[in-house]
Length: 185
Image 1: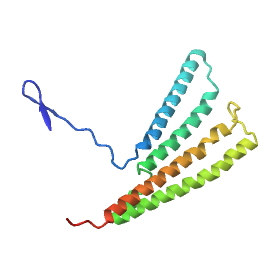
Image 2 (image 1 turned 120 degrees about the vertical axis):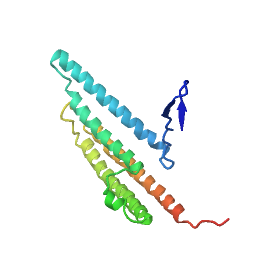
Image 3 (image 1 turned 45 degrees about the vertical axis):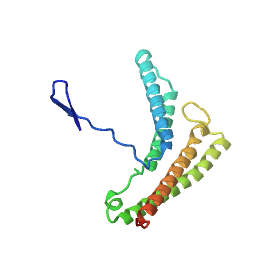
Image 4 (image 1 turned 180 degrees about the vertical axis):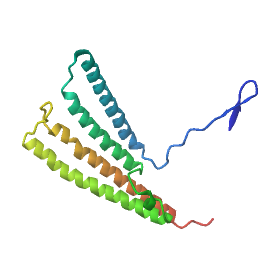
């Protein structure tokens, strides 16, 4: 599809916007907004620290500790979004090769393994949070309770587990729909 300018000359073709993936969960807005807010906080903290250091030759002591925490949150939330969009790290030679049935089975297996891994990390990290709370561990930089940081690990791992299970359910539905016998008119 192309248009023309008022003098009749052809202009560049109009490219329609790419349609949103029909099977992509609408609830991914949560991850998208968390990523945006985390990046904004990270940029703001870093900018304020650089400006302060430039004008005063001193810096805020807490910025490095908070920045490391925010980068971990960013990685965990990004991983959750990648799992929900069926974009985790995989070996494409195996994942994309073979028959359609084989690809579907491998995708379902991968989603289950991601769910199992992050479910296990969720359970084990709850113990870490409890130990940080029970033994009153403090952060090395600014001395706040360590559990303020570690409490987010099981929460974000549980989110990734839930996204992997959602992906598995979507893949099962798609597999069942593709193998269902077609009705004759």
